[in-house]
Length: 421
Image (cartoon, rainbow, N blue to C red; front, side, top):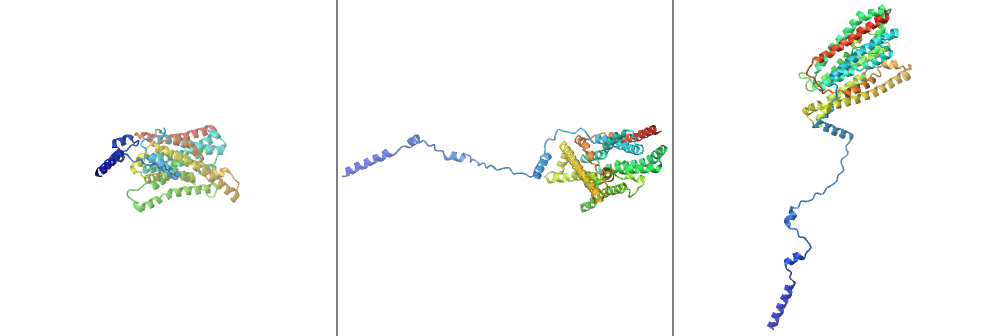
């Protein structure tokens, strides 16, 4: 019995051994690849890419981003306009000389329907002469932006020129012009009335009144005193800018009253008044405020004062200045046109007076911004980044300009004498 049990146990063990498969055979027969644990750990985890739509920026945010790129750009643009402040001053003096010629020709046309340059020539030089003040102002803007001039320099220069031109005109008029027209048969009273109308209504003979007035406003609105008016007292200093604004408005009111023959001012006062419209002065004020707030705006964008100083001397900023000034000129022209329509409507419909374009132009100074469209190409050719080491030419330019204006008066007298005598 025991032997039979032993045989059955051996047989069962043999059956179990036949069912056991070696490990080597399992690896060979299996199609699956078993990755070791170490390789699983070393394999990087793939990040899941989430596609997000870019945020739409508003127009203001796009403009801020564009300004930031320009501010922190490593390279400047290659375009540099060929004209400098000296060229603008030279052109301004030529326009000023043409303005004096237009003034004298207008008197001759009124008296005898004759002009040394003809009626068409008189109209052409009248338009061109209106560019003298804007060109001088834009040159001043450039010198201030490039830190080449101080406010005191402008105030002293324009103030002395204002007195010189005003007193020179009074002396020249009473000493030579008055007596000359008396010799050709025009009484002093009649000639004085004609001169008042043209000086008071048509052409501003002393452009330095405008330049000094604007320089004074720019000084009060932008300059920061070092000794006085510190802290909150700076507000008092800024309020002084109302002085030149009040002067412009006073001249405008006097101009309207004189145009409607309500008042009659002495002749010697007119060389010290301005005949520029408040809208033209407002254009210069807006540009001045734009320059003042530009630095603060850039600092809000994250720039330092040193970075702004560096950016202000680049060709990119000079082109930006020309672009903004040109846009403001076009806006002022549209505003001038709309104001002219409104004033004409009030005169004709509400007051009942006949509509005359001469009344709008002469009495209300409408349309003075229209000729500024001719200055836009000059502005785009102007770069305030150009500077010069030699300053002697800056002295020669105004001396040459005064000589040119003097020659205009001398040549005009010669033409009148040879024509009438």
